[in-house]
Image (cartoon, rainbow, N blue to C red; front, side):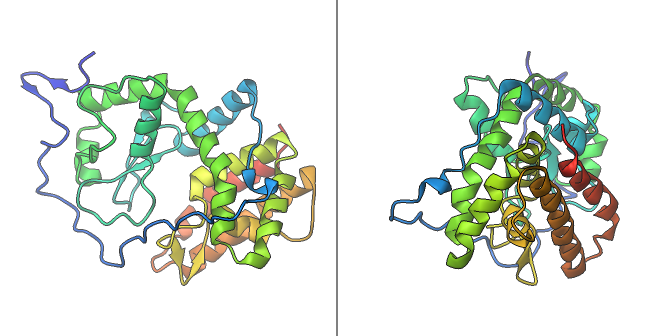
Length: 287
């Protein structure tokens, strides 16, 4: 299948006109990631949680439903008010060439992961390819084009790989969070992480939330110096709950963190509250 063929001309990812290019946002550039500490990390920091194939399949379907309504059409999206496209079951961020990258770009990392698993990418699409549509108007104008239809078909065929990619991000999150967290918070973050993971819906909660709002370690993903990622949710959990109680408290903490984000946001984000909270409610529901 020639992914990029569009008779009578050959389609090129870099060749879509950019006269409607969204101007880059102003602000500080993301800081480079810090070096990992040299001291031997305690065993608790490994972040290893076993996820069976059956559980992974169910979690992947739930994430697809959360992000894209479980629809094939939702596998390629551009949400209103955003300056990047959202791809796949996890709505992995894909930036055009010019805009400042406020949030961590994950679609190129997914493509690299797929290549590492021996998956052949569509012709002309590589991990270094920028999103060729400059804005949502250009994207939606091409939504039924051959290129986007074939991209959706490719993403539909790789759902299982996308799920494993998201699971791996969760596995890597704990040491990343502990490295940037205040020293006095590191053990508690790990304790809450593992307490939530004691039940299947808790494992799903950790996997989904880190894909949904990130680890909370990026210096650009803060409003008024307060983040909204997985680290902030674990830090905000009250008490020392276990099992289903931990999953319920994780759900409640996530809603508190997201409410704080809405309060701190420089622009009105309240339109997202209902959907965000509905998603967090699923974390407290046993499988």
